[in-house]
Image (cartoon, rainbow, N blue to C red; front, side, top):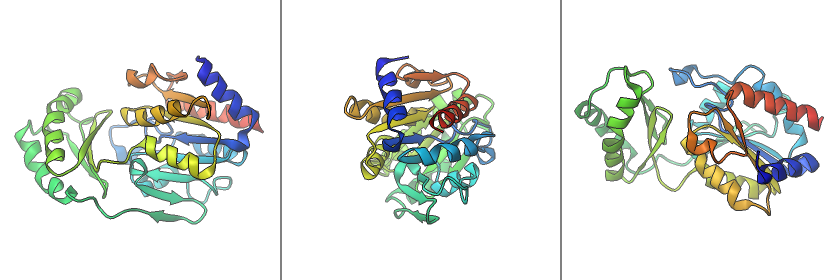
Amino acid sequence: MTEAGRAGQRALLDRPERGGVALDFDGTLADIVPDPDAARARPGAVDALARLAPHVRSLAVITGRPAETAVHHGGFAHVPGLEHLVVLGLYGAERWEAASGELTAPPPPPGLAAAREELPAVLAANGDFPGLWTEDKGQAVAVHTRRAADPQGAFDALLAPLTALAGRHGLIVEPGRMVLELRPPGVDKGKALTAHLAEVGATSVLYAGDDLGDLAAYAAVEAGRPGRPGLLLASGTEVPELTVRADLPLPGGPEEVVAFLSALADTLS
């Protein structure tokens, strides 16, 4: 729907062997579900990726999930065609490579243990909303409000106190779709994407995401234009900040993303 997006698509179609494809996981390749542990890649997603991967320079999943969790929930391990897939977890802090099955991760950030210990008291003092679910990601901790009786009300009530908690321990809060994540500063999907594209030497890029955490990746793609043409896809319409910047909004969410990737694989084949 934009000239910049059309230029990105042309570059990817003309020279796919120089193109990088990077995708978020939850809300992009997998539907958003009340229980994040139940999230799985959409039917057809892994097949579309496996057919697409041999034609492009690189294929990466960049997610706020721990890398191993995304690999498990996505079903990405030991898939013919995905031998060179890279999963960058926790916004790029972790890296899993399909070629070796190796996971690399830094030590837990300073302050995280203290924030984790203080978190229950902060939640109890600010509404103690029934249905909250706390996810320990090892390198981060996330508070999900989706199961609360009033998910948006709980999210709004907890944003300021959790931001204060994070600040006391040298962390930041990453807001998402009914989730507030306390994590270390200095890593985001934009930095992860930029470093990955430089590493593989990609001269064009397609990126798809659905949430506020994907805005940094959008900014990285935009900053690389026009020298590195890029195509930005928005999965769903729940985050207008993303949708208004997308070259191609896909209101059908992950189902439509998978259909797009499958059609792209068909075209390149």
